[in-house]
Amino acid sequence: MTILSAALLLFLILDPLGNIPVFLSMLRRLEPARQRIVLARELLIALAVLMLFLWAGKYALEVMHLRQESVSIAGGIVLFLIGIRMIFPPPEGLMGEIPGGEPFIVPMAIPLVAGPSGMAAVMLMGSREPDRLPDWSLALFLAWAATAAILFSATWLYRLLGARALTAIERLMGMLLVAISVQMLLDGLASYFGRGPA
Image (cartoon, rainbow, N blue to C red; front, side):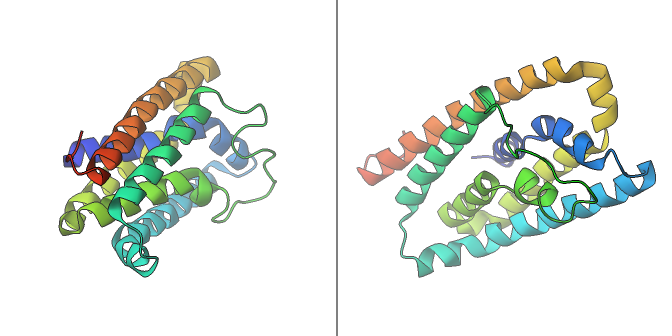
């Protein structure tokens, strides 16, 4: 996996376009200047959490005595389920009802940006090829920067594209994520049965 392909995978998982309506709903009661401060804070917290899982995930797997193949297969299944939810979202939405007031860490940083699927993906990358942690860190930063750019322009994008276009794009991203997850699952199974990556 190259840095760019890893960054694309992480960008799809972070799902900034799907988060735009949720973020706008949570921040609408705040002044515009305060909205930018809160958004920057939450995005930095999410980046720190994902970096922690990337660099420390390998040691967590060693403590739990998990093989890389099992993590790859489990990661593929998790990403598959996330992709399916993006294509066929539940009626109550990903987060259900959003509480009022200024959000702090939950739900914007975790789990909307740094969600379980993102944590699992970076942990999988770090555990499969630990010698490439600087590459994965760069890929994560690129995906996070693209996510931040989209979320900071959320109001403009929402006016430009509209809710229906954003929904269509999110479902297309879900389709790509399903395809990537199936490949991860096949690679894990092929590695387990000793044939090398599929």
